[in-house]
Length: 170
Image (tube, rainbow, N blue to C red; front, side, top):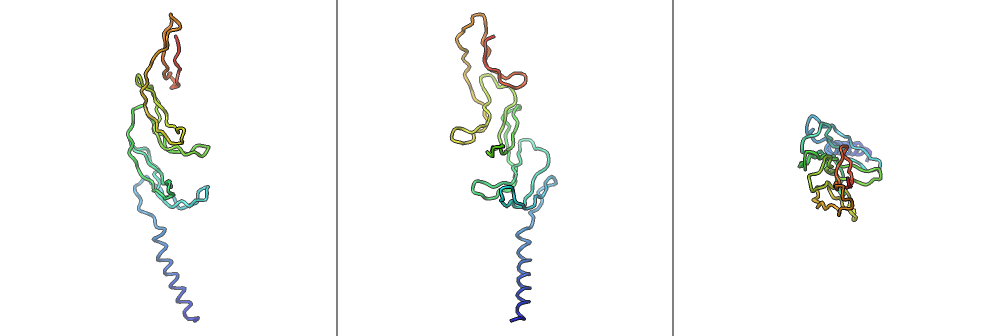
């Protein structure tokens, strides 16, 4: 019985060494501008598997989506997505978590003046909690009936510093 114990231990060690490298090996490096993030536990105690993370500059009309858990709690490795710019004056806001803990998906944010008859509606959650991405919305500009015969109605617009100026009589 004693003579079998060392053989059993050697077989056990050999099996462990044969299995472990496959379980923890790194996938090949996807490019020069990637760094390896070792497996770790996040603040909530969830084990984050090792993965490659892009550290380079932004690429036009593409966004790097970091590795994350999806709604089914399955790990989704980091990957590129193609994003079409809605206009020259739009800026991509990467996905992030608010200080309240609410998750905000990546979305376009408009920074310039609107085309005549349209307004930019920033990305927001509707009353049921569904994320509505930012979009351009057509509006019909109907000036109010003149209360001031010697003045002209100025519709709402973005001022020189990018803030909305409400419609007013001038």
